[in-house]
Image 1 (spheres, chains in turn red, brown):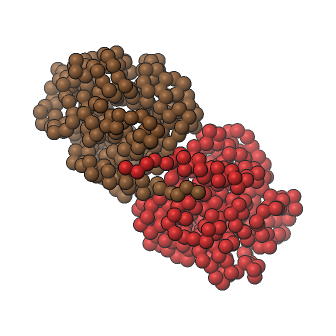
Image 2 (image 1 turned 60 degrees about the vertical axis):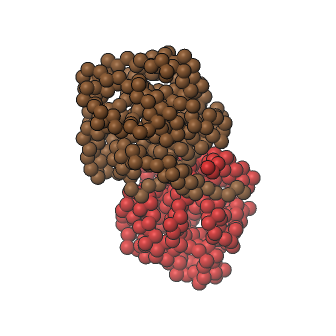
Length: 302
Length: 302
């Protein structure tokens, strides 16, 4: 099974207590694709500007990533800047320049329209809807979102929610969207809005997965050196949906493993600046981290 | 194996968004004892005032709790008041009246001095030291502490740390004591100060256990209705050390199970005001919550 994924490709400027990087290739779709392509073929839908050349495109080269759906438009590529607090657990947005993203109208290549898994990355819900409407068949649809869309385009967001099977979202945004603080109640509220499944990512506190009444929770892999959390949630999504595509199954054991692969890719991403760790990642390292999370969390039954 | 436990017995005043209780029986030792006595005999060392009568003592009645070491002194019982934020994840101390606790000099009954497990509850480190010095033999010693002692009696606290095997502490206080934000580094720093093992409780985010280089992490059981977090950490300690006393083992599998029993008692405690849930708790309910945490966290190996 392949994945059709839409989202942002961007130039990121990142400041952490340990260093700074200016105009490096980032964006939610970039992290998602690098993570998911370890498991399956990923067809990208996105827009870049004239300043995003062949050199920048190299980040996707030699991987199971199809770029037919990446449009190069007149103007500059989407730019985002963020700065992290000393312990990396809070982030201020320094700037957001939508640039070519502002006029983006996603157009799916014919070969993308019969999709197995559709992943709607964090973006304006009208763009997410437009992608869904161009898809002629799909087996599973997932989405992400953020505080900006919850606050400014709530009605449109609720429309997208009705049409997807899985919401992958940060826990604070799950609370904001559901208007419930308690995560169980928050997930139950979302399940009334459409998606049967909710994956809440909680940064260094791990993640929770809700599938109907079934709940799965896993602690985060504790890193000795956290370098840069940018893209960890998108990498989580890539590991999660990538594994589901690879296994072609949605049974309970597979879904729980997918959460672990999400956690694996999220934790690996944080080990270096921007996409660096994902770019040099091997599948053996992914499997090794999976086994380490199993060791970390294993305890015997009564 | 029995446990010798020292700590506070108090009158607590608790305000949460869901209700208020004035002068109910509380204190770290009360929660610890109610939790641990489901697993083993618990010998208490504490002080109460003249206002703590037979009626209040009933909370300990009919349980595996020995009160020979509880002294009734002239004056009023220790009083503490706290108020929780709307989502229960932060707490302001309203007042602390030490009263008889101020002149407390722990005196161990002869029958307590040969102890199997010693637990030094959260209190002035000089009192913790005094208890340790009266013990003639022990197999395992654990301790708790808090920000007040880290800030005001750090040297004395480091003396106690040198003499215990396990530090059980809230994650924010682990960071404060170790002066390391990263929990792995924080635990490693503490292991250099004495205790081979560190259990960090993280409230709704679960707990982590460090035994030499081995790390175990578990997510918290997600409650649909959290009522009052008071005493959750002390109940965790009671479940943890209680189970270790019951099994008489310190192998890796037992220690990990003990963390789960800590998590079980901590999560149950939060389900009602003050000690109410612990008072009406059955051992079957404890086993049931253990099984639920196993279901919550289980995933297959690769």
